[in-house]
Every structure is written in structure tokens, then in C-alpha cells.
Image (cartoon, rainbow, N blue to C red; front, top):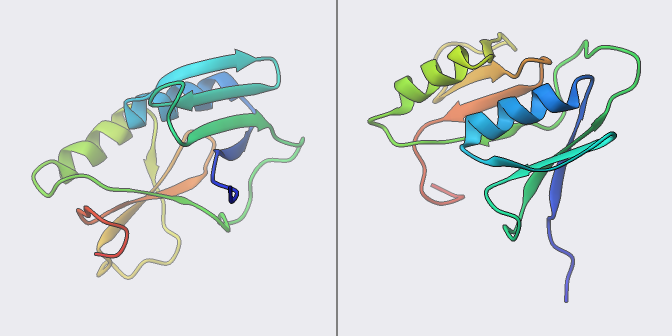
Length: 124
């Protein structure tokens, strides 16, 4: 069997707070919480989840090299962005022109993510 994606690992200074933010953002649950690892996902048997592990002593200072893209329907995209802002996200400028089909936000620790135009497949 070929390898498959299991977790996307995000370094964090406050593992519990980051896990709670992402669980609420994605309507997922905290599935496992240990001292040095917190896992969130849609269910324990889901094909992929997010895993939060301790970051080094320094704070994030540059744009992420990898980020998550989230999507929703056209009818609720703006409401979802407002919901994400209300639970702790913030808008960030990484050099957007204003003509993009996505909004760039950051989680409470500054990790950028995008809310892209509505999509139902990986290539549309």
C-alpha cells in the first residue's frame, strides 16, 4: 500500500489553544490531548487530521511556506470569514492585490490560511 497523508502537523506555543481554535474553525473535535501532542479531526477514523506539537522558543516572523486553504459555499463565505474572525483569526496582508479569489487570515499564533472561493473539487 502506498503512503498516505495522516496528519498535518502545526508547531504551536499553546497547543491546547491552537487545537481549540482549529477544532472550532473546522467544526471538528479535539480527539487526543497529551503534553506534547494535541490532535483534532472530524472523527477518530477520519483519513486526515491536524496535530499540534511544541514549537521552538522563537516566535513566527515570516510568511508560512505551507498553509491551509479552506472553502465554503458562495452563500455563506462572508459569514464564515466573520465567524473565523470572531473565534480568534485575524486578517493579514502577505502582499495581496485585492483582486484574489481568496482572503488571507491568520490563526491566533499567526499561521496564515486562506478562505478560497467556493470549490467542490481539488481542481475547480
